Image 1: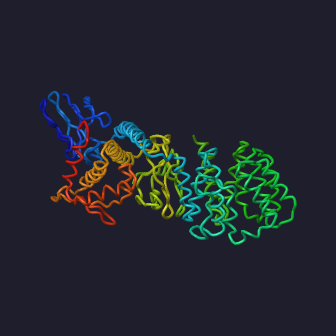
Image 2 (image 1 turned 180 degrees about the vertical axis):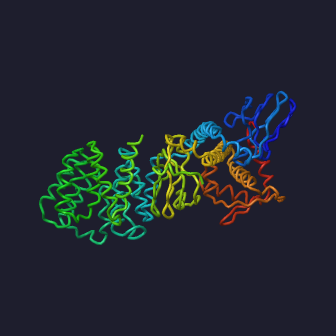
Image 3 (image 1 turned 30 degrees about the vertical axis):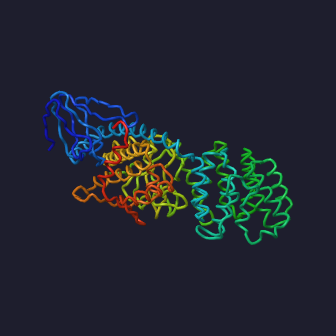
Length: 346
Length: 215
């Protein structure tokens, strides 16, 4: 049972540095929590209100007291052990919620203070950090992790200074994942390495390391178009892809280019044409290796047009299919579906 | 465990090895593990370090309740993991109905406030040697709290690496190495591959106190 204790004026309920195992509620009198502000070093006096808890943080967090609890006027306090406090709180969730709010404010404040200090010391921003994290995973051939992180980079920083490189590395990661699976395959071609972005898309180097020197002309044209795409020169890329797809010469690059035509159109915001193009492709090439991505782009296009029902249908279709070829598309679809369904609730 | 059946619509399943969120990614959700285990990692230098492995009913990613601050670590599913994904909007409803979870979060917050405050105090020391000594004091304070109190010896051992110390002190690994080497020469510490021993913790307490301004 919680006990009532009486403290005389000028006595101290606990000292800074004391082990913390009791929580107090002030019932009458005056108690001040004294400590020096960690930022300014100035002495701070926080007066406790009647009915207010004190000593909660250090007791729950199991660390030494951070302040002196000084009695200013004879005080009566209710003394609780941690289990007693927890029992009380469990029967009155409002107490916890109120404290959560107070603590989260304190946490936000101290977090900001630490950030400010660190910012002076660490140059690396979140943007660079996210990119480097993706790069790390790719270097270590953790392709699905790299795909996730680089994809996030492009989501959050579509026009970021590393977006171009992130896009290229993402392609490397995706194709290496499809080709070799996580943890396997040769060391991925990371491109520039330093600050200078590589001139060309590196996807093909990773995917076809052995054929590097014997690329056909169509292949070269195709890679050139991929490069244009990753430089966001979508109009030019589209023209190239279209030419390759319509030439019908190369059995390997025609379907690839046909697929890329669609995603280039998507980037150009031509959602109706994307839908027409990919719908036709699904019918004419039902075994296309990028089928899942095609379905995803169809979903995305319908979503862009505001047809969420059709969009959901495509995402669900993807999730019902075998994920082994490209787990990333499943991941993306699940998220997209979640977003659409979540949006309906809130 | 609390009755969470009404929160089924927030449930998410992750396959083994799937990233739940990545370090540096902005976040607005936090997670409650219902089944499976989650590895919390950070890339330090050129190594992915496991910081923690979490099991049901632990909470992670809770800093996101505060603001869309970038994630400070990566969360990856170890096996098939089922989590409840929560955000500011549904958080209060969940807490009202599940005081146990609210209490767990409250405890987590107290710990975080302490960590951050302590980190702040370390970072504001001017003397690099004092910074590092204070990292050990901080580690000691939390370890003391979990029941080493009876220990009469002034010697303390910490399962930390150079990178950990560098992280807490906000210094480079090279700087930390130099200073630890210096402490070692003074026979104040011993460095092992998996741990660092402080020979006399009170010596460090005195040392840091002389360097802390305005105390």
